[in-house]
Image 1 (cartoon, rainbow, N blue to C red):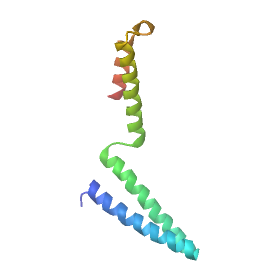
Image 2 (image 1 turned 45 degrees about the vertical axis):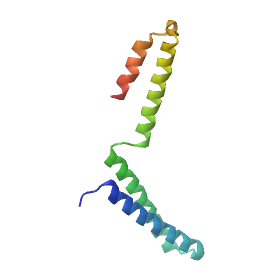
Image 3 (image 1 turned 90 degrees about the vertical axis):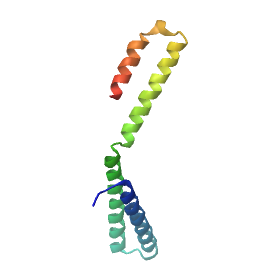
Image 4 (image 1 turned 135 degrees about the vertical axis):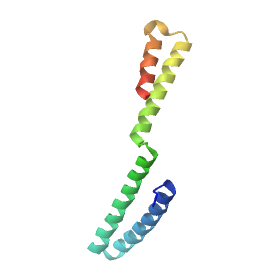
Length: 102
């Protein structure tokens, strides 16, 4: 079986549905067995999320890091366009930031 996003979506929907059912059951009965099973499904949901990150080759921290670098590059490129280059060697700085991405 090949794991892909479609299959992960199917499992995540299935596990989230089961988790909600167990949560409702636990809230009405307080059963320890239901509570433990509910947390097993929560763990499976987390595993699906990690698998999706691995499959896509991206994680939230990586995406945030890239966004921060892109925003910093844009800021210094704007400084460069508005002739504020007397404060720093912006070309070198921009080049260094771009090299961090690769």
